[in-house]
Length: 118
Image (tube, rainbow, N blue to C red; front, side, top):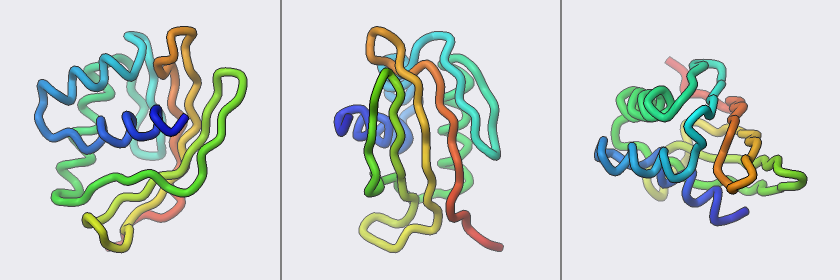
């Protein structure tokens, strides 16, 4: 489970478009979906575009794993933080993922627990 979360966070932090596309393809199934309060997309290109959009909205900030990790029956949940490297998070969230038989992510349902104001 820790490996999945670390790879997930690394994909969200990847700024090189080609490397990000490769990370998304390795982590998500071709028909994967990603839904949170700000996005509802499907497929590798859609997921990579959401990641690029988040990086554009929050330049210089990085995602880090949160404190919660749990998994059973092909479902996992975990928390994450977004903020300056080594600094206080400006956003935190909680994601629930459904895994395919090959261990890749089939579906992400994301929730924002704390979002930037202003």
